[in-house]
Length: 634
Image (cartoon, rainbow, N blue to C red):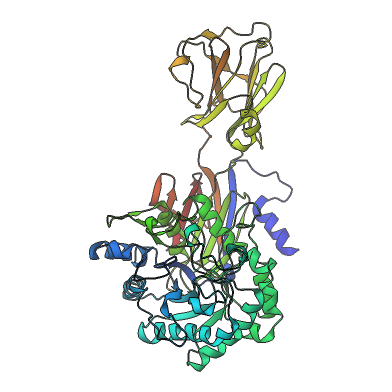
């Protein structure tokens, strides 16, 4: 109760006072309130995912095989260098191609050449900058002979091959530790082995032609049984420091709802042997087979029985490589309460993914001519990976606007300084001029700019388009000229659809208007094209809300073809698409200056200046929409 009262005092300064204005948002980062240890942000290199015979099809989805030594070095520096992503964790796949027959020899280098080259160069670069990597290896799928179908990517595990599978895990783990000298920390049982409907009923179809990668079905009971079995097998190989994870469901909802967490929790030997909770983070805004809401129910259950248990996201979509990608990372850290985050492949060669990759976002794309491009995802991800260095701690944060998502990392015992991130999702800023209401033949029709989905039903009867402009937005629509009620026509424009700051309107019941006749037909594209040039411009200037800003204005024009009326409405609002005023308060930090770097639609990890806190640990920042800004203390 006391903490709630304190929070109220922080946000309002006077508990009974009104919130000061709609334009300033209070954000707080409490470096002195750590939530959990942070192991770092990471990367994944994927070499094979679909090939059943590497000699016939030497797949390299990561594309390193096409790059010359200079380009390889450039990418390694951009990822692992001191000015690069600086990942602290990494994921290595164990594909099904390392052994072909039962009790046969292992070949751990056949299908891993470029994967090893990538990580060897990365580890060397990391160590040269006094850093380190913690590796997790994931079974991408077992050899064909270990399945009842006796085929690559067969669905069902042959329990008579249990020891063979354990040997497959431990031989590979020992090779990584002893031969490759990789700091392997975790072994993960499976990669999205939860989805039993990725196979036909008989479990035989490989489905590679549909873009499905390696896998085998892992039931909750199989996972619970194999965790302690693999723990014992690793111990027999003297790999005591290599811990076991439950494998990686597609998202956290499946880990809990589909019974994986409960199966582990109900089996003491499984819970005792568990070293890390893992899942992928493929979430969405609706529930469905492939995506779901963000939650941490399963991890919470296991942590309640085994305090201190950590959780990692070991694969996740880069989405459209925009601010939504960034906000999903925020959800994983603060809603799923994870300790480490690794997205899907950091470097991709699209031509090598069968039937198009469903997650094409990434940091680097390699083309078939041996060239690479740096994608927008790189610059957004760099905001997080550099701030959340290994062994820092996730800090408690507050924000009085859910569009502005702060994320804090306290330096803890590390050599880094405190850092925090501010994500401006820029979806529904309350002061945005974002709605026009038009009266047509007695019917009021609302065209929403901030939420185009509201206009879907309108578009079936009234063709229209809305586009962003430098000054505000432009609405264009058409309606039938026959039977049109000229005297009843009216327009109102709203400054802020949800939190109203202004309303202006136009209505002339007596005079109506006289449309300009035109033989040319305007294109409905949300732009005022040449057809409207000779038309009279009507000012929408009747103030209908007392607090309307005098700089908020709009005009409209109309032209008539033989049987249609075409309207264009131009809205001007100096606050539209402007930066959000954010008051940032920092507690528990010795840093008084913060260097800021920003990634947005128009910026690629750009230094924007140094901010200094006042005596109260505060400073103001103008945050652009759809941006991610990181502040590094010094």
